[in-house]
Length: 427
Image (tube, rainbow, N blue to C red; front, side):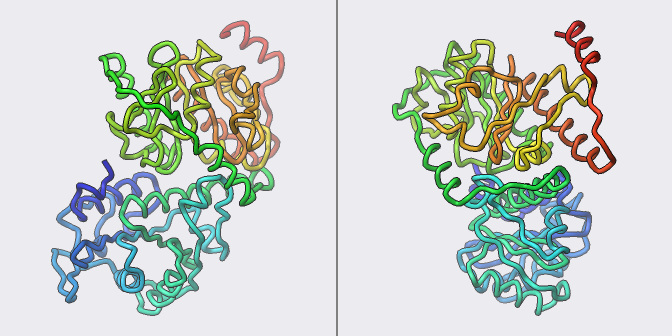
């Protein structure tokens, strides 16, 4: 269930501000969130109250007549929230924050190119740019509103941060998180080399090839073992989101249930909000009745059929691994013993080699512990879901060490004799 469908506006705000704060995308005093309810009232975070300890009772309501209900003052940035709502009746939720990567773009006066991955352009839409004005001023509200008047739902604020709108809180947060992911990936990628971007027709091709789903439906039976697998998937998905290894708009997890039947996450669904009943069963190639599985379902199905030892698969976009994926830089996993033991190698495949029906056979058949699909995702497999997630963590940690190490000097991997010793003792 999406958060905007059941929770009161004040509870939605608390849930999202807590998520943003814990992910390190805002500070104790920075950022503000608001929701316009069905009566036109605006619920907004308060001014000068610790974002790390906010409670529902701290949220302020500004009535349509200007009356303020609550024990605090509304955010000092309320003027630009109101200006956006006044000019864009289709927007009902606004997030303003100072996430580090997007702030980096704001202080060099640039806009991140969302063609870095196929989903981002559709999620974020075109990005506006508002010139600097004094925080909390009516002038700031005016320049931001002018950008939203052009149709933008995301606007870089010069030397300040980012402001995003959405039809609801889920929509606004997905846009916010996806845009910050793009900014991070570009920045990390530039530490390694020159980022490459997708052409618009490549993005169109992505949606054309992933549109196909198992046509037939089946009435699913849910024995205890199957229900246990659903719980495992939800737990790992939520964990991945909390650790920045997955974002709202992208990430597919599947687990083999029996023979070549498996469970997989759904499409077009916030990974943060995933629940047991949202998971889709695939049995005899047919999808569970009334549900739409991930667009990557057929790839997962092919991997399970060809690799009996693979019992779980994660496809996701984590920023440091994707830094290698967007620069076509080889990621040498001979960084520390654990990295090589868990991953052994990290092959990279050009964008589009995962498109069906002309998929790269090597990608399907070798079932490497992990591989990168350039400008798309990292694919990790394992004997069970915890092992697969562990491999993902190790891969992302290794990628982070390499990205940071690149600024210090030459990267010196473990040598061949040391690799031979690891093989003899661990494999």
